[in-house]
Image 1 (cartoon, helix red, strand yellow):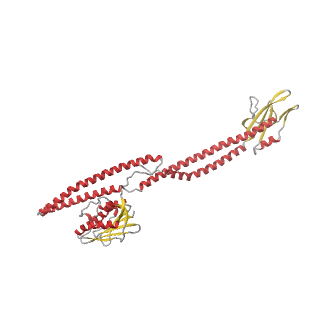
Image 2 (cartoon, rainbow, N blue to C red; image 1 turned 180 degrees about the vertical axis):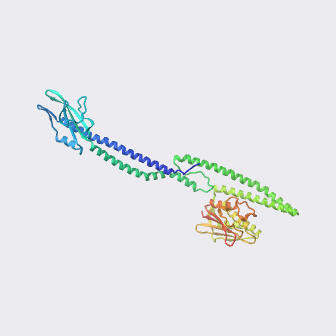
Image 3 (cartoon, rainbow, N blue to C red; image 1 turned 90 degrees about the horizontal axis):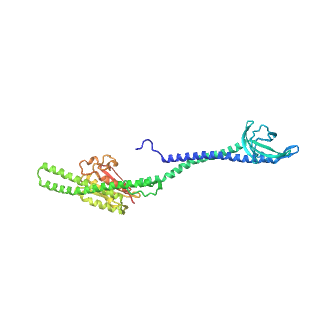
Length: 459
């Protein structure tokens, strides 16, 4: 049993997709920031290393000592790094020949032909430094000379920050775009569920066919479980309807015998008290027989609703034929039918068994409640694309009871207390109307009586 507010799968899925997009955007920002720092440092190191090697290659040994030649190409190479501050140092055996004496020095265990890079702090600035060493012949002796070149890292940080900022803007745009895309994607992913729900929801009350709606692989277990449940429900309905049909069939035969014996006994008995008891017995037998007949008819309606056999029927001809069937019964009760039909045929696509059952119960209901020496008006019209069949009597009416209450099973109106019936006639009419895609209503008629209206589509 569920408690609390129902959970929305669409909202949950959309939130998960948005959170995933946010994680990806943050990951993109961090990845770009890291890559930008590494790439900018590699670029600056390449320039710094090339400048350091250029300076070291421009060292010359002369009779007066070591000559340092800072060529314009070297200086232009260093100036390509932007607004960085440059520092350098030339030293022989630890003795500074030129440059900044207190520049951070990296001790080299052996001569370094290729630049060695390291970080250091100098005069409150973070430096990136490169050092190489080479040997010069001075006074007939190979003497190691160490060259150190460094620059500040502000430009490198600006490059990395700019790239990271671009990545952050792109990630934010991606995140904002992911919100509507996540909602659309969540809706598309859940659409098969809505499609299956709508297909099942459009079915009638007795439509127990298996669900054949195409579904994704992930929903096949759900569809299979739903079809298995429908199969079990259909089997239960079938057993119930079979039991009702068999029970009604086996009850009607002895009830008919009981009524015949009661009528025979009523003719041969002269005692008023016994005759009153016999009449009550015959009335009870009639009520039981009628209930059994309507139960059987109701079971038939439920069965036919699942397996409709629709054919083209002339509703005008069928209505006239059904009225003729009940005309003799009406005349026995001193009633008459007033029939109003269209001049042309009224074709309709419907199940004839269901349609006859609805008309039979409408006419029988009118005869039961109409007083003697009155007319029963049967009117068939064609408003729009459908048909409207109205059966009006001059009985006590329904007393303002709504149709929804009267069409319930075994529910009878206030005026039905002393009238034989089982309370299934209007239920059958209502179920036939729903099965055929129409509607049914019953209201109090102007001037007294009741008006039962059955509306049906053409097909």
